[in-house]
Image 1: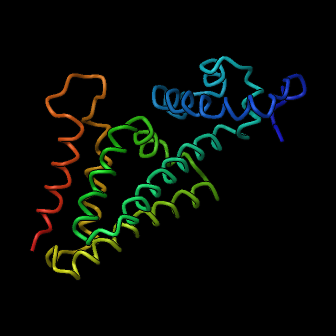
Image 2 (image 1 turned 180 degrees about the vertical axis):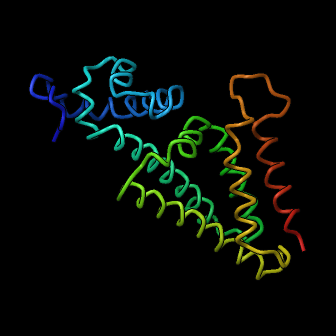
Image 3 (image 1 turned 30 degrees about the horizontal axis):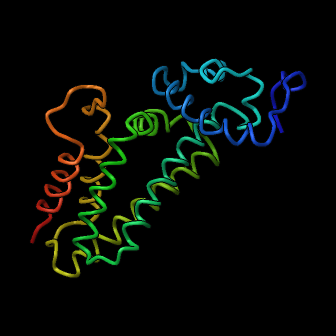
Length: 207
């Protein structure tokens, strides 16, 4: 149910319209939060970007913090889909690690705005919302740990500290918004970046 004081005068969107507008609302929210920051952005800004009344947004989420949570959750859902897709191929551990690192880096390159929001604005979440996102982050790290442990057991990587290796991988991925400018002319293609990232990471852990 909407919680806006304007909801009584805001027409409820039809079911099909609501479904079609959902992706548009989320894209607009990502742009606004990225450009203005969570504190500087407002639901009115998002409504203006989409071209709807502010009250209409309350049929998609209950508050600005819920909208931020939605962005964070979608990011984890997409990353978990990458883990599942790569794992389903039945590759040996080092091949799976190589492909996973490439796919993860490509997602980060494709979603610079989402990544920046996640790491710059995640601290704005509170209570159960924060706990939910932190739990998703732990699942992400556990996926990596499990794969690295398999690669280490097979002898494909050396006697490295797996937790430290995860910090190394995440540090590289999370820094993407600081150096990747999608609209700028670049010397390296995305394919070259993903290949080099996977290669350097695996070599750093070689026996």
